[in-house]
Length: 307
Image (cartoon, rainbow, N blue to C red):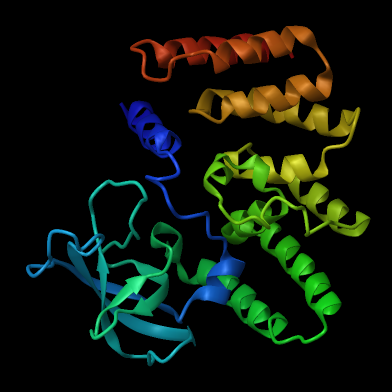
């Protein structure tokens, strides 16, 4: 049941066309540039919006947020504000808030109102423990300083360094890898930013080595590691292939949907047609069929047995 629910949520996103899913993925750098307010606080309550109108999208609930830290904007520390949101499952996904949770929020003030809304919907609210927030706060303050640099070459170089630093820490891994390797994430299908795919953030050898060492230190394969893998893989990369095989054997029983992505990478790196054929069998599975879980597990097991 858990697997089916997870697959449903994933495919709900995948099945949305561009009209139904109008917003592009919004990594941290872009959130910092575009947001009116960046705050960290605790969700004290979530209440129903009794005055919501029929076409008030993402305003069915009101989040009561106590502010503990302000990184940008006119909101004051200690202030209690109200933020519109919605608990409905929709596409695009609304910002997610949970009562009692500490949350980093990127907000804008509604016109002619005292309430706020979340910039870029689900991308603009991040539930973070204090340790995770400290990582985000450091990166946000760094980017704010980078944006002040007038020399464009220097600004660009420091931005690439910054993205690498994001990718090297678990809380901000996606924030860095998405911009460095957007094609590795299925959500890039919905990215309308024409600059996303021009590879303007090229890495030097030192940066690639840092990312490679970090990837090779991972104890378990996760979907969020695909960007790192694609950035550091080289032709005939025996070291990386050996690492992937070892971690795949240890992790495949826990895979839900990410197994196929790693199977295809291993098959490509190995150059083995038998592995490619097994991976292709998985791609042809109907994820909504009654026996998907069983068939998926059988294919993963078969693939692992050939390694």
